[in-house]
Length: 97
Image (cartoon, rainbow, N blue to C red; front, top):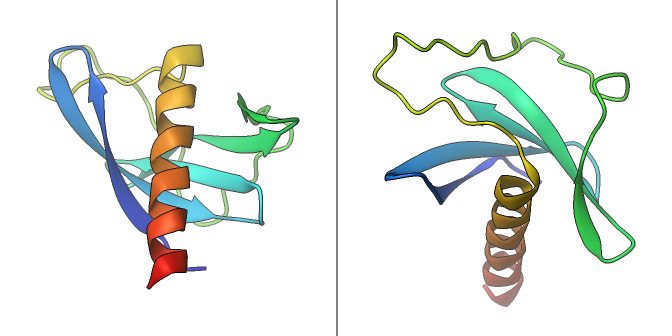
């Protein structure tokens, strides 16, 4: 499966994330060219992939910068759920094409 972009609401901002599928149920979350983390679908819910399970590959890990103009996205439970919902919507749309 090819990478795809999603948009999520984050605070007062809309944030575009690139989703890189790594398996049927696991997806790396890319933000500004770096890995923010990864999410997986297990037991009917979306969870964060532990850092021990996550392989960066060629990409660096994202570093938060409080002095930048971009939103500093944190993968908390609400954000993970929203990312998961957007992944599901995108996958359903691709399946219907």
